View (tube, rainbow, N blue to C red):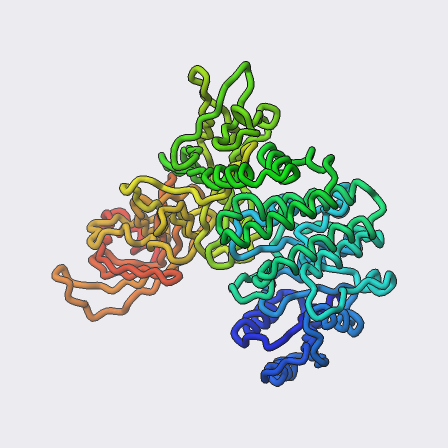
Length: 619
C-alpha cells in the first residue's frame, strides 16, 4: 500500500469532516493504494459514531478510538504505529486534499530516493505562503539544509519505516505549541533525505478562524516559552552550526522581530510591552549577533534597536514600516495570441504619499522619520538589485496560488537629491501557463503582484482603476475565458464558469447568414463579435433550429438538433456546424453549451448553385 492518511479527530465539526472525506473520496488514486485512518482523541460528542458510519461505507477507512490526550501528538503517533502504508501523510481534521494529490505523489515517489516529500501546500488567506519552498519538483533538496522543511507543518509525506526505525515521534503532552516544528527538526536531525513536490497542489490548510492554531499567542508566557524551547532545541538536536543559524534566523525574523515590528501596531499597549520584554530577553540570550547579517536593512535596524533596548525608536520604526504599501494597477488590455497583454504600474507609498528615497553620493537611502538611529536613512543600495515585481495567480474558490513567469525590474527616477522607485512593464499572462497542472481550473483567478523591495515585500491584488473597463471574452485552448473587473476592482480571469456567456454577443436577428456548401457538406458559421479566438481547439455546443414564418410563427416542421462547436477563425470566435441537410429559410435558433444559452433568428440564404449542389448530393 502506498500511503496511510492519519487524521486526529476531537469533537470535529461535521461539516468540515464532510469536506475532508469528500476530498478523499475524490482522489484519482485507486482506493486499494491508500487508507484513511481516523484516530479519535476521546471526543465528547457523537463524532466517533459518525466516523464509524464513514468507515462502514468504505473499504479503506479505519477508526481508532483512544482516551483523551489533549493534543494531536499522541493520536498521530498511534496512527503511525498502526498504519499499513509505506508512507504516512498527516492531515488535520478540518483540511482537504486536492483531487489528484495522491496519484501524483505516488508517481513522484516511484522515481526518487527520499524519506520525506514536502508537497505543495495551500493556505486559505496568504497570497505567497510557502512561496520560496515550492519552486519545482526536486528529488533532493539537501542543499537547503533544515530549511527544506519549510513551511514547517506536519502535512508532508514521511516514509513510515524511517520514522519507526529512528524512533521519531511527536512530543506527547496536553498542549504543545508548534509540535510540528519539533517533529520536523527531529526528522531532519536523524538524517532524512528530503524531496520537494511543487507541480500540483496537494494539501489545503483551510483557515476557518476556529483552528487550534488561532489560539497560539493568546498566552504570552506560553508563546514565548515555546519559542525559547525551540531555539534551544535547534542547538540540542542539530550538529551543523549552519543549520542552527538558518533556523534561528528564520524564527528570529518571522516570530521575534515580527512581534515588535508592524504587528505591534495591532496590539494593546500592554501586550505590545509584554512582547517587547520577552523578545529582547530572548534575543540577548539565544540569538547571536552574527545572525543579524542575514536580515534585510529594516529588519537589521529592528534587531539593533531591540538589542539596545530603545523602545521609543522601535515603536517609531514599527509605525513607519506599517505605513508602507504598494498599489499595482493594470491598463491597456489586449489579447495577444493565447495570452492577455496589459500594462502594469506599481506605486510605492509611505503614509499614502509617494515614497521618495534619498539619493546621496551614488547611494540610495530609505528614510525612516522619527528614528534617530537610522540617520538620514537606511542604505539600501547593495540590496536594490534584488528588487523585482512578479505576477502571481490565485484561485478564488480553492485558494490555489502560484507564481507566474512574468517578472519585471524595479528602478528609480532621480530628481536632484531624491529618487522615486518605479516598477512598470508590459505584462503578459499566457493561458497555457495558467491552465497547466491546476487542481481546479473552472473558477475565478485573481492576479496579484508580489513586489520585493529592499525594505519590504508586499503581495497584493492587481487593480483595474478605470470604471470604463469592459469585460473581455475569449475562447482559448477549448476554454471559455473572460477578463473582468472584480467587486474590489481586482483583475480577475474567469475560466469556464461564471463567465458572461460568449453567446451574449450574438444579435437577436442575424438575417441573412450565408450557408457555405462544399460538395455534400453545408457549413453554417455564426460570428461571436468581440470574442477572441486564437486557435482551432473546439468548444462543443448544440444548435436547435426550428423553421418559422417571417412574422415568427412556428412552421409545422421537424426541429433540427445540430452538433456544433465554437472555434477560432482568423482570431475571432465562431459557432460552426456542418449539417447534412439544411433548407433555405428563416429559423428560430437556440445555441447551448455548459450552462450558456441564447435564442435568436437567422436566415439561411443559399445561392442557386449551393441549392443545386445540395439537391444533387441528396439524389
